[in-house]
Image 1 (spheres, rainbow, N blue to C red):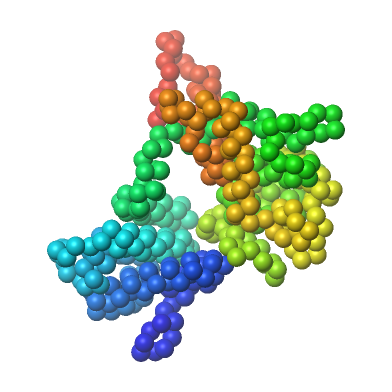
Image 2 (image 1 turned 90 degrees about the horizontal axis):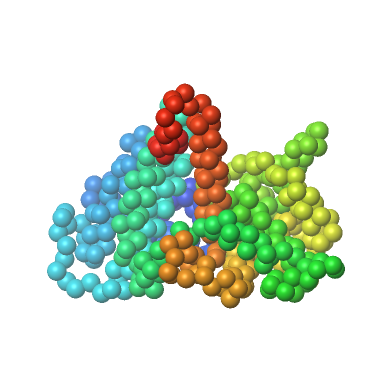
Length: 383
């Protein structure tokens, strides 16, 4: 809040409304506290508010990204701007970790500014030029974020450095995963499936299948409603609509949300997946008038499924995965997997999709080859 006008600051207010509003109160408080420190730093260094500078720069988020090292020193120096001077006072490890978290929270705020203001609503450039500019700014911001990732606590840094695997499933791993999650039937029992009832097995099978086949993020999956799947007029093509919802009933403390505006999209849904979803919605999904979300808890209240529940599903599957296929987790192999998580499925979708595109382009280049000498094209030439 501006102490002179007693009005909320414009850009942090937009950040709160558009990005933080459905997060937990602790997340909102921590994020906005970090942004406040950044605003204090900016005023101390430049004598004006960041809102004024950002507006005067014609909404150029890059003016903030370049200040992250100086903001870090500001925090380390006890909230004092001292250009290129770091205090000799010993800073505790706990304080450094706190400062790292605050810098990364401000980086999230800057990322929001890029997504919001590098757009046709605020700039006259072509959509292609704006997309390239936003991509370039996000790349710079990602590099900045990586610089501060190494300063996180030991348990996280050790986890990241010890992970040498690709963190995506190979084709054989995907087949093994389906062998675990395939629901039992009256004719054939699946002893590997860690979930008890048929309804739970089918729901969790659908969750894994959608994450693998379409690269959905967990939040996007949890936002899917019964109305999110639709056929076309002919009934021969099907769509999966990923978007935000206007549900009045939202009991989840950590409400799911889309990563950014570009996450709103319509995906072509495979016919078999459409059939599976239709069966689940019509026959297995618990009936409720409170909400329209596809995936619900197994409890009688039929509340929408939460982030915690999805991670619990993956944890149980990962345990079976480890017990049945220990070689997939062995550090002796370069393509081993450390842990099966929802994000692993997104990495897998991206890897297998790129592999398929590369293979198709390779075959096309071989068919169009006019030279007599066989030559395997380079990645740069194909991609």
